[in-house]
Length: 428
Image (cartoon, rainbow, N blue to C red; front, side):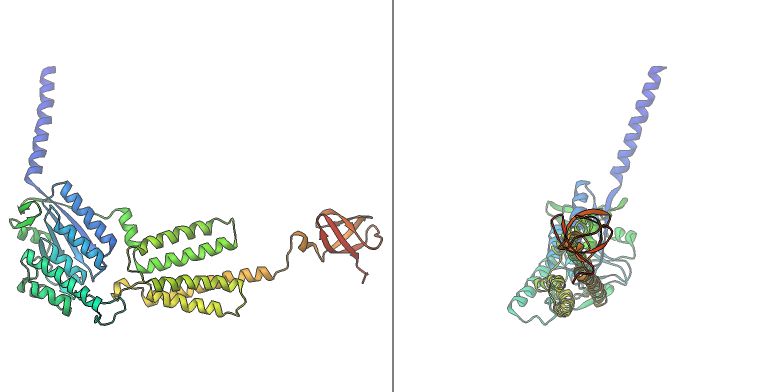
């Protein structure tokens, strides 16, 4: 009986393991990630992690759902290199319906092993622009354009896509619909959804650094790779508006701590916000002149508290903060700039907060001191003995040029350590 039980357990275990292995061997693992919004450092971090995870798990395919108006060139080049060096085939799928692969999205799409679009998606407008929005006519700007054109042409030639259109997208900012893109050999596939996409990719060959791979996704198991908490935080603090807001709150917190030493809370919050702001700035094309103007604005508002300028320093701070915010991010892409409405709102709020701080500090400075030796002068005391007076609930040793009588009122003239100099109220 015991032997029968043991053999039954072993048989069940082996059968379960065999069934599991058979299921795994018969189904291909496909990972998917979704990239929305501007391309930045956080985007590169997500793509790099996804490629690494796909390689570690021996996935058959990685699909990047892409919908972006553009982004930063440095992050784009890093994403391209990651995809080109991936040991797992990567498909960039411009989806859902109505999605766009603009600017940086064009380069990323062209770098993929397979390029696909949803029926109503569009692609194009990859022309590099200067940080001020002016025409690119300088020698350096021409070099940037030539370099971008060369990069996209090389990836187009590698995957056999339309290199001429790719270069036109860089130099002339042309765009295509999904049907035009497939007819022009810009993308490989038009797919209504992921099932349609997998059906069309199945059996296709592509080149990986290790050699040729035939994609087998006839039987597929898809898993979505969601961003980690750290990546979500990085995505949020990498936006220009949040960077400006964090820098402003950080400056305000430090100022409040300096004028109220020991409060702790404003200083801690200010330091954290400044560190987060500087971290976010590392992922953005920050204009140093814009950053200097924002810092100058905070300095002018602090100086207004110390220097009597009749509001000139305060007004100068408002102007400096506004123009610093406009110049802070060196890009003309609307998705990468600080919106005017947001900038006006933050300027008004920061002006009001610094104005309130300045008013409270100036008011405190002008208010008569109510503690210590200076605060005792002018107060009325009651004589208790020939050389002792009572004031503010305590007995003080006192001296007077006239003889004092118990019970009479005297005025405190000055304080010397613990000795009060007093005079009679009727004295001149």
